[in-house]
Amino acid sequence: APARAFTPHAVVVRQTGRMRTVRVTSGVDNIRALCDLKAITFRETYAHGNDPAELERHIAVSFSTASVSAELANPNSITLWTTDGSGPVAYLKVNQGGAQTEPGLERGLEIQQIYVRSSAQGKGIGNHLIREATAIAVREGLDFLWLGVWENNTSAIEVYRHLGFSDFGEHVFRIGDDLQRDVLMRRDITTPP
Image 1 (cartoon, helix red, strand yellow):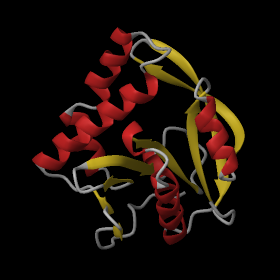
Image 2 (cartoon, helix red, strand yellow):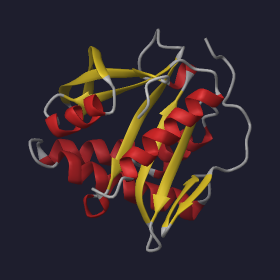
Image 3 (tube, one colour):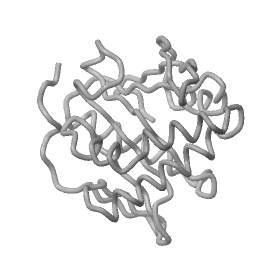
């Protein structure tokens, strides 16, 4: 089990046209922008089918500056975001070791959060972020990627299956006080995205 932090490396930067993907580092402006991006994309993804009060309770706690600052300071987590010239449009948060949300998956890299603003969907950004997660897993010597997907987000489940992920279990995901079921999916890193 990787008890160490991620391998030290230079800031990840990928430029494709106007799209740029970089590792998010701590700093007041970055933290505020990341909190905003997380809240916007979470609302866009989960507003339908969820109680608005529970959704806002989750956002207030999970995407507060204190929570996001702690995530960025965790040596077993990496957050990347993609910008399009006007600001951040997508982000990816991956975890290894003790930062993972499920025990017993030490040989894997968890994609805990991957969100693309609705206005930027259909441009290949999500696939790009999956490739970045794969590159991190390869660099860290890990064997597979894994993630949890809300059971009612059938379009995301189909996208992940198309990308080579398969179901391997489930866990509970809390939105406010509402307990929901996530489908756990994994893909060996030898499987191309």
